[in-house]
Length: 490
Ligand SMILES: Nc1nc2c(ncn2[C@@H]2O[C@H](COP(=O)(O)OP(=O)(O)OP(=O)(O)O)[C@@H](O)[C@H]2O)c(=O)[nH]1
Ligand SMILES: [Mg+2]
Image 1 (cartoon, rainbow, N blue to C red):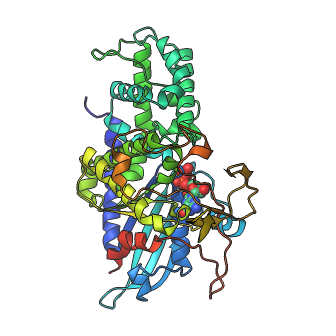
Image 2 (image 1 turned 180 degrees about the horizontal axis):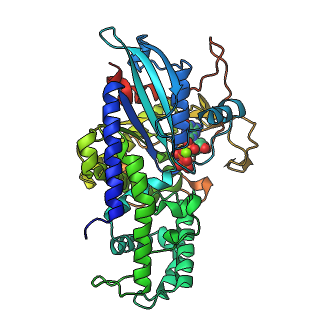
Image 3 (image 1 turned 45 degrees about the horizontal axis):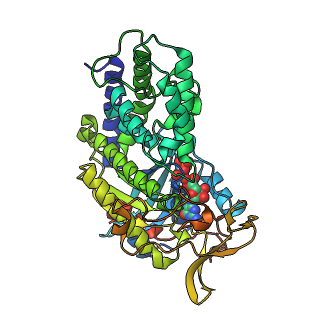
């Protein structure tokens, strides 16, 4: 099918914008950094902590340009896109530093421009502009839909929903699916009911007991201003493997809406934001998957494959190949490493490394320079050895958030507690052996029998530094900065 006129116009506009950015980039070197990750992975916290540390002289010893004294200062500047909301940095800092509360879930895309004034290796004064983009994690997994037809997406989604533990959560939706006849005349009430039950299924999969990651379409979970519109009123159907949708059928109606979703929601997000990124940090909350169990870990790996597919989509877009270098660097980061004693940080890194290696192979992805790291954008805990019977357990101490539970204790949000979350395996291979019972999580048992238990901590209480500013502590944020920006500040 030839591209629609609206698609051509959109791509021409994108080309014009890319050209302007390309020319602007020659005069003012700019990096567009995408902070990518699924829902609750820690994107907003990461962006806030990164900017806060750069603006206020945080401790970043591995970030060479800063450590060697070549960075004169970092400052915020007006952002380039007038139609995109500004990332609400000040409110997030206020909440983290003063209220000791985490930011709320992100509902829309936003951006922030940071300018770093530095001295290059040969002593010249220069500036690097860094544009950072934040968006709701749910939207990320929409991007692979661009390469799918409605029939392909339906078949994939149904296959996945028939595997445990998803199959149990899909029972009500599957029952309704049996009553749907794709070839019969379109029926708005049936479509509404299917979309509602399918959305309930996606929400149930996201519950922390299951912690599934692969849950497109994203706007079903985070609809924003599209709630209730026809572009969100569709669901998979059990379709024949051959043939086309008869005119006026339920099948044709669902297909039309799926295509509208791609056109109205996914393509603009891809062209306006995603295709313009030069570098990516992909934040991965592996600990939520450890809490839930092996099925969640496998699902997370599938999500990583899908994310890598998005980067391939980015590289295939011919316009972005002409006017910008493709994504040059991708850093995969296991977030919230402060939930583990440092003796486990390398293990967490190895597990994510193994998972990305497999995902890269499965997605047949090649090109960008890739690294893997375990980090905490905001370190909410400190470490301690706690005696337990005859053992001394490497533990962490922090303030569990109100309502979090360990054993019979429910925390009030003010009391500190020492926790031993469990030791990650030394050899990541054991987790990927294909054996579903490699460890026990909340999906299969209650919390007292789970092998790992990561409770949510409140952000830490802070002491002002020598300049009188309370800078957010972190783990390995400097290593992430070095990988993402170090070469551009050489
Ligand atoms: N201890 C600790 N918790 C963190 C850290 N980063 C994120 N969290 C926790 O993870 C939650 C989600 O972090 P966000 O930054 O809001 O995640 P997000 O990726 O922006 O999520 P969406 O906006 O929903 O896509 C927070 O509310 C914290 O509970 C960290 O560095 N340390
Ligand atoms: Mg967010």
